[in-house]
Each structure stands twice: as C-alpha cells, then as structure tokens.
Length: 162
Image 1 (tube, helix red, strand yellow):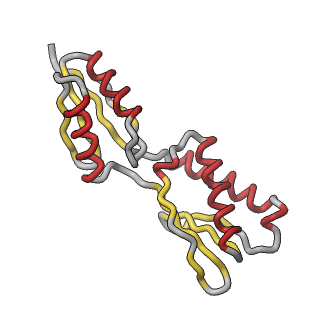
Image 2: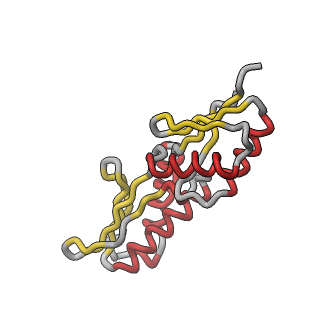
C-alpha cells in the first residue's frame, strides 16, 4: 500500500480578507467615534494601511479589522500588524497578511512532528509548506490533531490529504 500524505500550509483567502476589509471600511465610516478624526483603512499595495489623528483611534481601527477577520474565519496569526507610528499630523499602522510557512516555523513543525508525533510519520519541508506522510491514515490524523493543538506562531491549514 502506498504512503498517505497531506501538506501543512499557511494560506490566507484573499477574497475573505478583502471582504473583512470592506466591512471594516463601512464600520469605520459609520461609527460616531470615528467621525472627524481622519479615520480610514485601505489597501496600500500588498499592505493594509490604517490612519487616524491619534494613537488610540488607529488602534481602535485595527481592533475593528481584527474583529472582521475573526468573523470571516481568518486567524489573527496571519495578520502581521506593526506598531502605530506618527506621520505628519496623523498616526498610522501598516499591516500585512502572512502567506506561507517561513523556514524557522517549518523547522518547528517538523521537530514537533518528529518529537511528539506517531513514529511512522515522516515530514519534510518543501518551500513554504511541509509534506507529512505515513502508511497509516490514523497516524496522519493524529498528527493533524497534534499540530492543531500546538501553539505555533503561524496559522496552519491541511490540504491534499491523500
């Protein structure tokens, strides 16, 4: 019998992110506490740019966006938001959505599988994803449960389960 396998990836649905951003834009435009403070949130190339006239307001805009991401089922581990910084008379926060598993986190995933996973499971890093294979599908499902329970700094999804 051939080995079964699945890929561990970290991807963000661009359309869901866009929908969350559009909902955040609507809420920022309609909320009373954001009136006349220059509050806005928008795409700026690949980044999301939040602006307001005070540090507290721009943090509140980030909170609104985070709530919309959660409602859309996007993990906040995928959001990489910077600290508020002054720019002229306003404060800004730049955020971007993390795609792919970087080498450091991929090594953490493979080490976790090697140390705590079932012994028949093998894992290997392939670019920005990790391929996990085993003869036993039950072992693969146990490995998925292990990774879901692990506190890793990256949002993980499981694809190509064969």
